[in-house]
Length: 260
Image 1: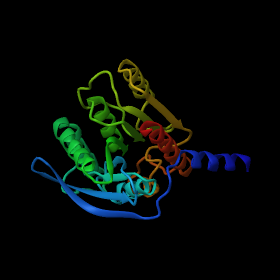
Image 2: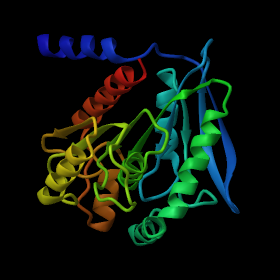
Image 3: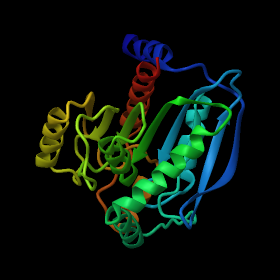
Image 4: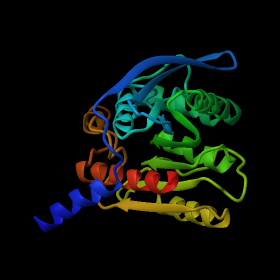
């Protein structure tokens, strides 16, 4: 009981004031000739507040990314669930998801253009303090936000949830963006040698990086739909409620410190 109460008190200490009312809407923005279909969630703040980009899993821009954007708006942030594939493209099959995500990874210029288009769109929102922008990403999206930090894109902080750690851009050093990596300790997609290489890279780049590993958590531990996907396609995914809750609290603490 004492441990449970301490978690509640800790959560209250790091969570911005909750907002009961959130306005959401479909939005379209451009990266060159590519139409990008996003989802904007705006809290009823009286003053400008930080903005946060949400980058989807390899499935594409779907309801899960939108859910997280709405949750961020409930915390007082204006959040934009971005579209990295174009035209709001998404899928429920891993073969297609792999092809979509690989196409982005293989074209860093297009990936950067699509991300920065979302960034500029978010900065232009009346509810956003354009000097306080962060980004979070899941799986493929985690890799995207880490690579944008490597590039020196104008972000105060990024959070990767069960994201790939590999670099697909030519990064700049030092890395000025603060970084939080929320990793599942039993994530079979991220071998130990890649974790160690990533940590060494961050150290060499003088990055302000925190790496949190959640015991027993597997890949996609934040997504309640992971178990169904694992069963349908035989993929080593699993939802972990404890790690999901804890990582969301860790993210809130991170952004609270970042935006102060």
